[in-house]
Length: 169
Image (cartoon, rainbow, N blue to C red; front, side, top):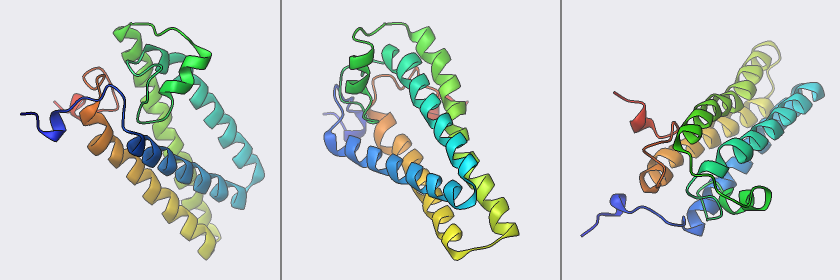
């Protein structure tokens, strides 16, 4: 008998995709509000970076993923099929681009936090503090659900740099 943690999803349940996409939207929205509150140029630069990030993920990671054209935990599996109809079965490229993607994801979290902490130090406002806490909590929840809910059930987990167990020796 399979234990729940041993189940590998062919298609992720919609409730997992919905929860993860909602957390991501809340995280990115609060990050945008933080940057808008500080400086419009920072907001525009961050949003350009986010567009680059999603382009990179769809162009260089999703098209090599097993969940290409399927329901994945991030909600991109079905979307990528419209841009790149054919999945390319190349684990080496999936790993290479996945490693770059991991660095880019870390920057998505670090940029608003660092900027808001500096701003809080020099010009404290309760609103900025609340938004920084919201951003931090949703970011932690997003990455916690990645490790606890998504990765254990993923067909690509042994190749993915986002799965922490692959990075612990």
